[in-house]
Image (tube, rainbow, N blue to C red; front, side):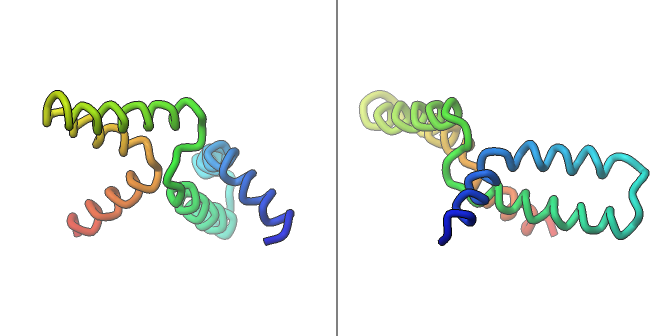
Length: 111
């Protein structure tokens, strides 16, 4: 990969959620032509899919919370109580990839 591609991926990873919010805000306005609306919807879908492809959350705080819950859940399961498995599941809910896969699975079941 070139430096431009790496920079673009880093930008999408860091600012993708803000870009998605701007696109959603633009879609709520009724001043768009059908072609513009279709292009923005396609871009929003691609951006949302890209955002859901990462295993780790984007911000440091979310990464720290995810690992904290996972570590406490794993250690708690071995030494304290089997109920600590719920902390592992809660920690996994911080991962965009896990949330995306579960959402996709539930959507497929609902059809």
